[in-house]
Amino acid sequence: MRLEERPASSFFQRIPAISATPRSFLAAILSVTCVLSLTVELPASAAIPAVAKEKKPKADPALKGLPITELSPDEAILHALNRLAYGPRPGDVERVQQMGLAKWIEQQLNPNSIDDRAMEARLQDYPTLRMSTAKLIDEYPQPKQAEKQAQQVQAQARQERRRSDAAVIVVEKDTQNAPEQPANSEAPAMTSASAPQPWPDNPSAAAPMKQPAQGKAATNGTGRRDVLGGGDPNNVPRAIADDSKRPQRVVAELGMAKVTRAIYSERQLQQVMNDFWFNHFNVFAGKGEDRYYLTSYERDVIQPHAFGKFKDLVTATAKSPAMLFYLDNFLSVDPRAAQRQAAERAMRQQRRRGGFGWPPRPTANPQQPPKKNDRGLNENYGRELMELHTLGVDGGYTQKDVTEVARCFTGWTIDKPRQYADFKFDDRLHDPDTKIVLGKKIHAYGQVYFHEIGTPLCFGQSAAGVGQPVGRDVSIE
Image 1 (cartoon, rainbow, N blue to C red):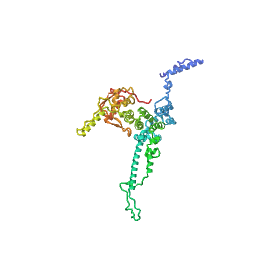
Image 2: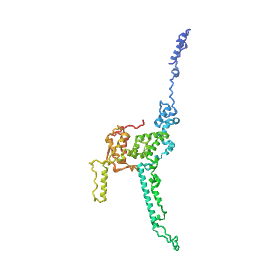
Image 3: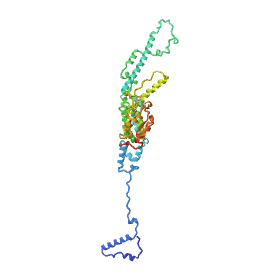
Image 4: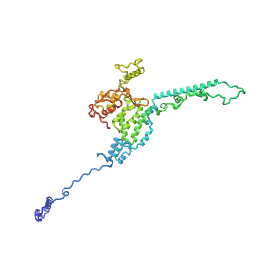
């Protein structure tokens, strides 16, 4: 409302007369103020004071780029170091504060960008980490195997000594049978041209004669190393002569390397994930040859896939000799494989004989129960794969699914378990028939089975094929 243009006398006529008393004077002032506030248009800023905007708390530079949290910067950094690493080391909190927590997390997610040469230098103290499985088996044999090697070395050395002693005896006989030279001075002197020369085919005749005492000393030997090595200490298996070459050393260095990485590695998240997956796909070191397979299992299977796809990691563990041996899948074969192989041998024999000859060997009666030493279907890995590695205990699968998965992995075995120990697929031992896993028909053959069943196992596809998750999420608590 604007002030009307009226004579000043009419405006002031509205104001009551000012009394001489202080109370009347104050009332008159309040009246004038009230009239002016109703008739005079004042600026908005003056009429209604603006509400002051609340200032947002300024984010700490150490937490820049991260969601707002009620934790203080130090608390947030400690939380990250305890969850994504093995806990704070001296100076870690200050270092993360300086670089920023978001940048530190991004760096941990890209471990190849982190210089970790100081930790790698410490791992040089553990030579078994760089050895192949075949090298480990050769360098750190079991006591019985080392004893067998010593016996082989002894036998070889004894055989070489017999050949050497036989050559010495031949030389001695030739010397004794040689005609004596006459003592007559008139005998013509033999020139170098007419002197007898050693036969070309008897090189031992030109060699110096070996004294019998030397051969006896070499045979008896002095000391345990000479006996085991057949007179050559270098041939003694070091597992017998040196405690550092015992097979327990392999697992011990693997454990010491884990502690070294956890303490000194700058790639902390990578080491945490390595241990997590190593524990998830567990293998028992105390079972037979697995003590030799574990080094390659962690180095060549777990570590390269720790930040990769889960499906690739499951496939790599399924093919690893450590897992094949631990869950006996290297022994799992199609129960009909023996009958097929016998029939194939009979056909080959018949073809070689032109269709004639002796009848083929009788095959086993399928109605008779198999012998204890006969290999057959082994469900250990199929059950562990579904129950522990992928879907979980309540994963929605049945015993029939376990059997079908086990059939898929028949023929997945180990090539020379006590020598090279590499993965091998033997199609002669594989079940080639169609399988049904979680309602999905598997038409593939052999090694490509995992490509077919990997999706329902790794991602929890239901039996109806709708893609509903039936397993449990794999996460770090």
